[in-house]
Image (cartoon, rainbow, N blue to C red; front, side):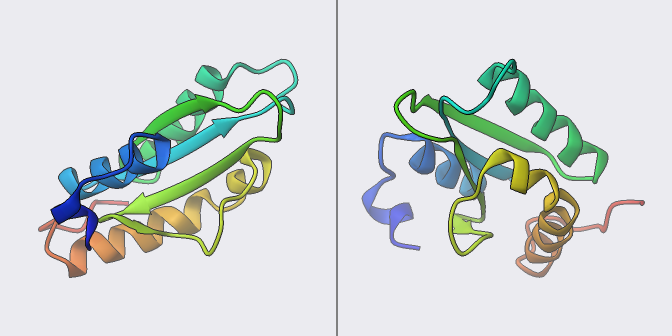
Length: 119
């Protein structure tokens, strides 16, 4: 991945990609919009981190306010996007188990985790 050599952008996507390269974890770029209702971006971030941990993988969320638009999330492992395009948090909830499983498989096959977690 070229970012390892030329650097990562100074935004949530860059932070999430870098984190996912540096750690055997999911990096999540979260652009929080005006569609979150009563929930704060931090509460949503903690929810996702907790749910991924329940699925045997750690995640770290990087937040940027996008108050003039809708919310979106991107998920990165080993610097690569796990989805074809960013999705809303409400759609991402339904994909937590699939992203977890795919991420673990990718990290295991790349040698970033040595032992499959107990499930």
